[in-house]
Length: 312
Ligand SMILES: [Cu+2]
Image (tube, rainbow, N blue to C red):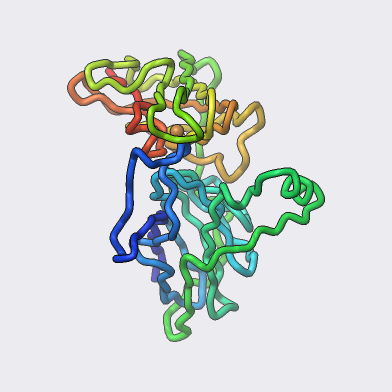
């Protein structure tokens, strides 16, 4: 029996009548941040699982929130897949960041436990701010209060569980030779204007241009390897490309961590930082039906942080 469970994580705000609250004009410059986590549309659901290995496919479906995923007992889990496919080998983790739009798959071993509580910590609250938090973090004493579980897995011992070890070889990822990379493109993500960290009135651009339905920003040759360098002028942005999966080469000049060495279609560039990936587009896209690249923070793409490209 294959226990794969898909979980879409979002944070939402509800009014006193349980109705969704949303206002683009009242969004923070980092996008709309909700108050309550919902998993597949439910608050703090439970899921019955067997006493064995359980595979979760997680989607950060938030408008703008970055989550830190961990379990309440700090247990180790294994990341086995990124946005677009299996990693070459499983990566053991106790904590994992997920940006808006990102997907991943993890294996949790429920063999010797009755339950597990998944936490989705708001990264902006987890990091802490100010001098005191910074000093505490330096001495490894920064322990922000943990939120309530967003999802609880409960073992039903009558179910048939999968107890075999996780295979150590999951995939073979073939990278091109440097000589096969034909062109380098640069994408600078910019946020300008606005007041007091407020979203309204800001202009969001890529390479100085806001999204225009009538403009094709890039023309790309089909089935040719390219290197894309993505730079954040201000703010953290999950940069997403349609019509492809790519391989991250560098994040801020450092080698790609093992947990990010699989096929991806979203790369986070932090405030004033950059990342590079290699990519090849194997499917055509015309002027009438182009692909897009954009920041996956909904309020940023809505404000113009998006471009169009053809593949021919
Ligand atoms: Cu953005």
